[in-house]
Image (tube, rainbow, N blue to C red; front, side):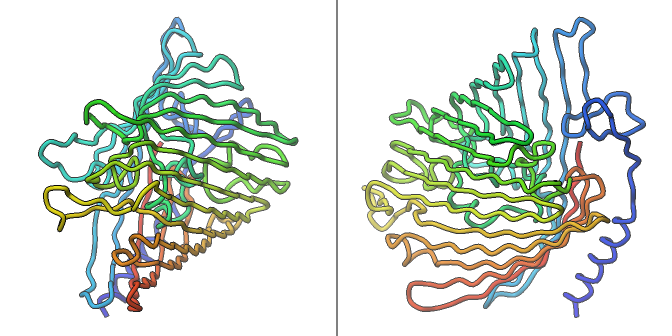
Amino acid sequence: MKIKFLILGFLLIFSFLSQAQISLEKNKNDNDLHLSMLPYYNFGKGLGLTAPDSLFQLNIRFRIQNRVSFIKNEDETGGNDWQIRRLRLRFDGFVGNPKFLYVMQLSFAPGDTGPISEGDNYNIIRDAVVMYRPNAHWNYSFGQTKLPGNRQRINSSGALQLTDRSINNARFNIDRDFGFQIHNINEFKDRFSYNFKAAVSTGEGRNTTNGHDTGLAYTGKVEVMPFGSFIKDGTNFEGDLFREKKPKLLLSGAFQQNNHAQRSQGQLGVDLFEQRTLKSVLIDGMLKYNGFAAMASYMSRTTNKSAITYNPLDLTQSNYVFVGNGFDYQLSYITQSNYEIIARYSLQKVGMDIHDIVPNTKEYTIGLTKYIWEHAFKLQTEFTYDVLNYANGNEKNNWYFRFQIEMGI
């Protein structure tokens, strides 16, 4: 009965808030949406300040994700989880010349920063990168930001159809890192387009100060759009919000070798007792047409030695590299009234080295999202069901129901 009232309450809130409308007008020059009451606002660029001599520009953006979930794991008592999932503040612009850009992003929610542990850094900094963009085709960057990895990870968490990324993204993505990146962009409206991206980075993830690094991570990625670029950079957000008039397709593949990694997932995870060299393969596909969107992805991680590492001072203590592979499949349709129905299926198979510790997982998700102002203001509900298969033949079934509000500029 408690669950029924909780779900009913979410649906009532969803229905009420979805009636809210924001006055939008279209700028005929740049095709961006902006609020009519603000003197300077472009969707996706934030509130901007430009110096009179045009030698400095600052854009300010924020995002809030508030959510509540009811979670029921097999053999456990169900319970509610109320949290600020994400709270982000971002600054970007240029200094001296529009070719010299900067991006800074800070995170403040507990789920973003993680617990404070003695001797560890407080993970408030997500991005701190400077860029040189001599023209529309080349971009050079130095600093901490996302690596050119899988599509869903590159997309902002605010541009997702469902309330969070897939279980495979959580385990196999290559995340943020500090280093150099070079992007060669060749995107055209209605003809074959392609991008090349490469990075050399520490391989240890964000905000690390663990001393001298004995190995670096090397990342390369190729993106192909056979039918031309998507409307308004549509590869960078999920769902066909702008209803592509012609089918648009993205195919991409990325590879990373992370030499002498010190953490269980390369840039993420717990510390290993012994370094490992990790290899990651990330393949994505995205199709959008007339309100329909489909995505598929494959992710894998392997290591050069056994995935399990032991404490040389106490062999009863161990940590492991999360090796294995996974597939994600996601379908959606958005109605004329901006309601979107989403379904996702994820299959995760762990490596044999760790199957006695970690189960294989199948995850089924359905969701309903109401877009009030594109991805910047939306209401999301989601139901997810997990099937966990252990090496000894045991099976567990877990599920959760979630309601989330996303708002930002």
